Image (tube, rainbow, N blue to C red; front, side, top):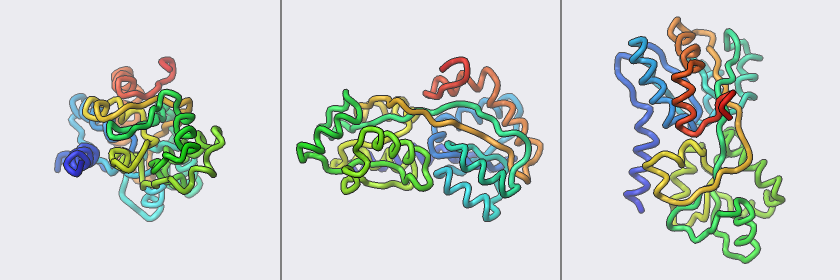
Length: 252
């Protein structure tokens, strides 16, 4: 299990590595760890421009940008964080609604939880006294954590499940926590769990909640930033997003 967790950590962290010949540095929500490298690769093939990425929870990246982090473009999993940057005059141009992401409930192969009924499955083992831990991203700064909170509230479980929550910094850490033998389930990005290297590690069910994905140019953006922002609205970019579990307007 330690090796498996190490492998997942490498998969989730390694995708942020780019060439030393980078042209721009962008900030991206953690749920883009698998799809963004593929988008960047296609963009680089078309333009020869290189992009490096820093991944974190949207709220964490927003704070970094407010404190002067030298990013040129921001991809957020929650529109409220982009609104915060707009209010602080740290952006330029129009906000782009480029896709919607989806939330999934995941139980590893080590978990005995039957998740066919989604959140109701959690309620059943909670009432039976068999619940150990449920992993979610921090709702205070991670959109996927907030979406998980909304789902649990809707099911009437948010207050009851508090003693069993294992709170992660971001969606990527939830994926790692969910593989622990002491964790029954985790709320993870659907775009993560459909990846071949992760889908075989457990069972999952897609939940009925979506997160609006937005991107915006930051105040100090160079000419490459607008090019990449335009690229993610193209047909080739949409095909990559859809393949990785995102919903694109007209294809939802």
